Image (tube, rainbow, N blue to C red):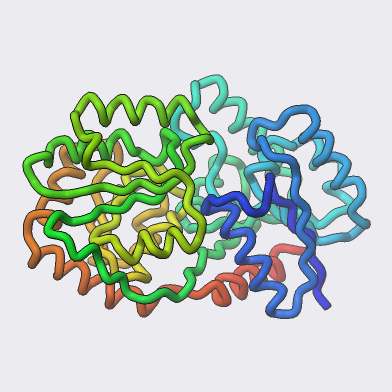
Length: 349
């Protein structure tokens, strides 16, 4: 039986795209006959305290010689010293969702520190698996040779087509944690330009990962007088998310950067029209003509992409039909697990 250790950068049940990818891939590998052991580090990465850093060092020290070990990049990127101590005796693979230094809102010094740290850590591993071709290409800047990189895009769970809200005012849905990278402020500014059109917005996502960002967003909504049209729902579990997708008419994501954008393929699986930014790997995640993409950080462009889908039922129906056609080609998590297994076979000595 093929054996693998998978190191997670915190609580495995954390509701984020990265953690969901890790859980689904591990499950797919097990279904395919792998012995895959999960090891959860303390929360706090990529800014670990000394306790979390010591826990990572202790874990690596306990793994047997020659073990195949996948370390999620959220942790690996800030553990270059700890990883270097075991790079010769363990067969290490980095899983990079997107480089740490590309997180929106970092000051220049922090971004530079994360870049240097992740570059050093990646030099210690046998290979790297990324979740998109966009991220794979970006790792050239980190000194990772192309032959040491493989791509295993996320899959998506089967889901029924959304029934929609049934209301005259289209119901928009955004699923994203309230952090600067997700671009909620851009979305609010865009919707403020559409206040003369009927619409409602529901935002599902954690408001505790960056409380300062959440507070600024609430203030921005109040400034534009949109408080009665935007609902902040907080973090939603899977049944609640399914209900939200099912009752939505349109999905929107204004991210500044995405390593893939799994919520977009989840929306596409439900046949929802999508408006998003062409940021990072988003164009890679969405098939041609299945969504309207605009430049990131451009509220006027986002507003103009949303306007016809809110105001014109025919335009909405056309994009929904394109989404329904595109959903048939979406990969499954079994497909993703097979790609991940193939990546390991190619990268591990």
